[in-house]
Length: 479
Image 1 (spheres, rainbow, N blue to C red):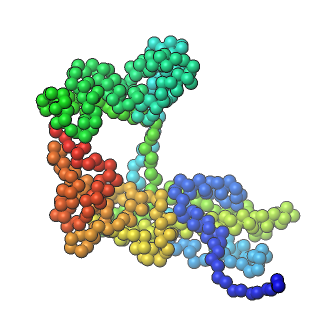
Image 2: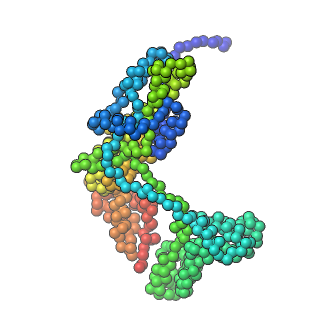
Image 3: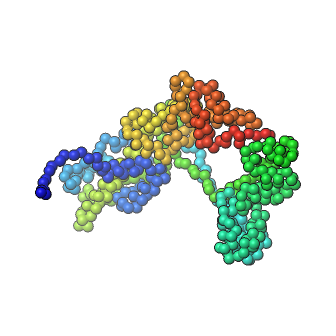
């Protein structure tokens, strides 16, 4: 028998409020993403305005102590009774909070120099097309040549087959081959090659290198050249080791990636979120607020909600304005909370990694998210969001906040050392090695033991690969 019953249950459920969701979202944004998010919100919310420079100066004069700045607007919450429409005292609210904005200000300190004059260099495609119009390509050959240029990768190699390009241009493969030879005669030498061998052979012809041994090594022994197996080349060529070394020296002057110098990939400039200055024996942490809009509530809408503007139209849109005011308040408070959190986390990082800031990378300590989370009394997930895509400018360079979190490697005395410090040790060992007798991974393990660092060979190999360092067989140099 089916029976309907009503039961009353008391359960606990974690619900994220819209304000908390917004705070979490803003916390994990990078600086550029935050600026874009604020700009978009200002377009959609008429209540939000950016403070004028005069208003910023007036507020800056009111701030006397940096310690007080960190706690501004942290002790009050906007609350209301019932539905919050009629019982809320807007006059008191505006008196208490005034024009809200980011509450951290940076003193007039000299920032690191920035490159502010940029120019645009020609790309590989533009440079080759410019040469096309100055060369003896016929009207029929020009489209085929442009098809070839359009199929070059960033290194200058041809990534499409002649048959594919010939079909696309409705010409014969023979004509495409002829046009390709003319394109390969353009600058830079080695351009439009189909593989490394062809690239090097084009450069040998272009540079007029009259050395048969050089051509034969490139033609027949590229694999042995890559593994530096010179004895095998000597055996097959019947030449002396001195002749082989001279030829290899000449080959090493050729460019295996001729198009890379014209790459349109530009360096990524990082804008730090935090500046760390050393003043005497102490480190001062300053948040970077340059370019970050200072927000406030529009005076016009303040007057509407305070009753100064009294009209039927103003009264009818109060509900809409109230909603936008609440949204604006949440955004401003979320930005303030974001800045406070970044400041506290940065302060804790500097405190934990004081030896690194004083003495360098060899003194970087192993540290995990929990170390900072316990110190600032926040959850590890919050620390992870704070340190993602946030950068710190220090006297020792610019580092992502995540850089300071790394695992530890055991020392023979029972203590531990940061993995980044071990990588730096490995890099230093390889830099100082004899190029003709480079250390293999096992030898590096033995050298690290002399520093009191206990590490496995496979770990050395992993660290070496992450640093982009070749194995000993490919680092070996006979000259």
